[in-house]
Length: 117
Image 1 (tube, one colour):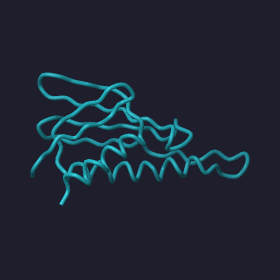
Image 2: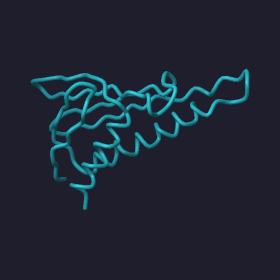
Image 3: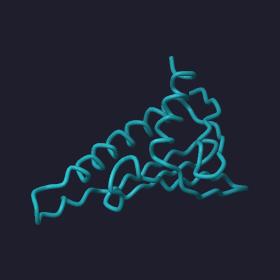
Image 4: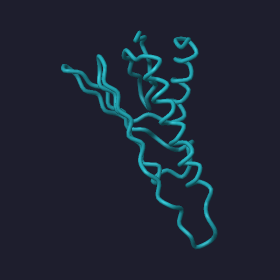
């Protein structure tokens, strides 16, 4: 499984790490499901009803580095406002920060356009 550098643009700055196209597709699928949950919440039910609670996205991938992405869709009013908590770590360093969901989606799409067969 070949890896190439994936750069995720964060709220401030960016983080780059080795990631395989297969792992990127897995994260992309998890984000697609999250987007559907966020859209379900944004489409408000009838007056007086609360939207059904949605389960959180918890994506994890282990290779040279451990990558974890977490998002609770119930706290965001729309996919455009949502942020994802990202952790990237190995035995020497750990970075935990937030990134905008729409930006992560763009970064993954760009990565897959350049590195997937």
